[in-house]
Length: 488
Image (tube, rainbow, N blue to C red; front, side, top):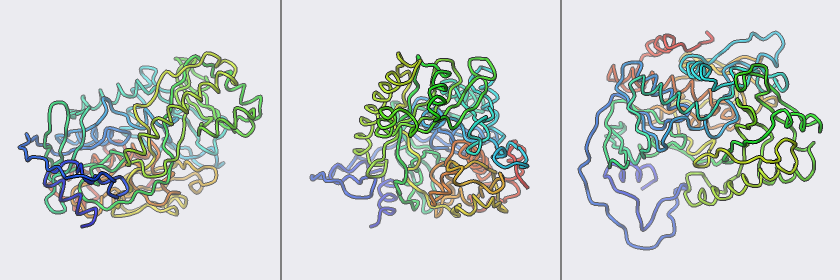
């Protein structure tokens, strides 16, 4: 029996974790000799919906709002106590609502991601929770704008938008399994302090980042482990201006953007630098702990993000490896504060004001979909006859850029999970080529994918069809009405 059949059979039968031979994230039996425990069968209360979105992260929030606005009875299942995901925990800013026009003289400036993602920014702006789309004044061959956010305000705003849209928001709830009927998902198992429940629906969207629902449903996947994990921190009692001067003094400044900070426009909201040019003690130690020089902020005296990276030896689905990584990253956070206090003027009394509740990933399971976006699709600015979004940012810029400061399209078929009739995937789980994935995994691309999958799932539920039976024209019309931008 292969891993796919194992997953299907155990989850359909409601069997719990196998104490005698637990399967690890690499698909290998862990070395825990002993007898198996057979969990007693149990009747679970059933709740019924049109659409279920798994994961309230960067893509999941937008997917759930989009589905509910289409009139679908929608439930959102999230293991943490708030929405936001990587947007609130793992990145330095939201990349990117615009094409890379500033790096290509003559290229037309255009906002290519709009709709629900832009609504989030608009609402944050009203309460001082974003820098706005601040143009880069230095380093604009990487990104033309920096859209920094207040992470706590982002959690609040997105939570409010979900509730206002009519989504049943199930936070502090674990997705524990899938209920299958051949290649079709009938429901999911959810577990919380309220008990274990079965949530039935017509359409499903996996936005878990780890590909949990797709894995439970028996979809084909790999675990390439091709990125480091991280845990970013918010650092208080610092001076943004003095950090800027520190980088400039050592000829290390590579990126800068000015936008709204603490209510005042024209303030520094993003900085980045070359560690190699900095004092040897600082640079060497920063490299040892995987610390990036990038930070963004929307508050005075506060670095919203200082990122610490760590490469795990195995996939981040491996619980025991992650446990070791969690400890190591927190040690690295403490060392980062020591470095700032010792070397950076204005940071002598810096302290950690925020950490993520768990480490962040850039990829867990890579889910096989009907189409795999290629490196050439991205850098050659290709569009498709089933585009559901346009995107123009590449995290490997300036080494890799989209031709002419243009955009490429994300096709609907790239979001349909192969082999499953009623499951879509959005976010960092798609796109096998690491080079292409360095674009499609970014936060604003994930948000755009979320609006596409949530809208499609709701239409499929309303028409009582599978994801491959949905007429593209109906999907495109609904997306355009939802404010989505199309290049052609």
